[in-house]
Amino acid sequence: MAGILDRKVALITGAGSGIGQATARIFAREGARLVLADVVEEGGNRTLKMVQDLGAEGIFVRCDVSRGSDVEGAVAQAVATFGRLDCAFNNAGIEGQGGDTHLCSEENWNRVIAINLTGVWLCMKAEIAQMLKQGGGGAIVNTSSGAGLAGVPHMPAYVASKHGVAGLTRAAAIEYGKHGIRINAVCPGPIRTPMTGRMFEKRPDMEQKMARAEPLRRMGEPGEIGEAVAWLCSDHASYVTGLPMPVDGGFMAT
Image 1 (cartoon, rainbow, N blue to C red):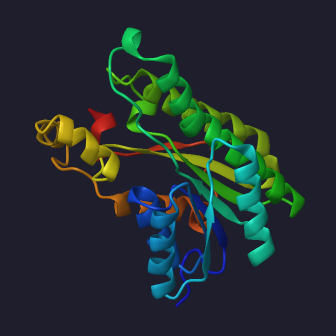
Image 2 (cartoon, helix red, strand yellow; image 1 turned 90 degrees about the vertical axis):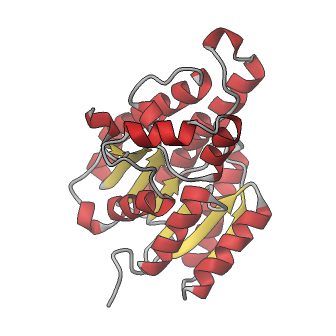
Image 3 (cartoon, one colour; image 1 turned 30 degrees about the vertical axis):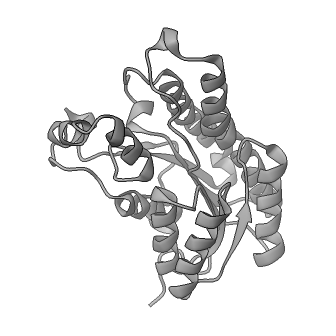
């Protein structure tokens, strides 16, 4: 039985670990042909082997999403290998350094914005241009955050970048809906990833606090985000666009 992404060509950034890796495995299960992008080659190649072991076609492309030439090269590789680009998950991101707003360094601010927000914009520029060249149609999902829908203290650059992703998603959805290109975002709550793992090393009490704050009373798993992304990229979500979707255990409902 064909999966919900059968034969679709999908680009996933930040595919080497965490949510990106889990999503790649789900896309493979659903029949997608994959272009896996990450700045860390070891992780990207590890994910590539995982999806190939699941029977999927795929390639790995080293890509720093803050560099326009890298992003354009990843999209070009997708087209050179598979002939087109049908969907994309712009997921690469970093948390940056924590601290109050007046203590955030300019270096930290610039790096977080460059990867989390400018990187998403650069990806969308290249992906949308290719989809328009193909005649229109396609689906793009960006990774925002619960911190893109509500204020979170001590992470000014991260919060600003993720709010920016949510806003950019809405604006682009309005622009390109007439071309059949749907653009949405996922807004994860606390998910067990290497990123949250680094936070918990510094604050061991944080995991239980986060879990207790969730109506479902637990952390989320990367695959739970990946399932939402796969649905948004599929034809099952054909009337959904411009949505920053919370996938957060109900946190935004509180």
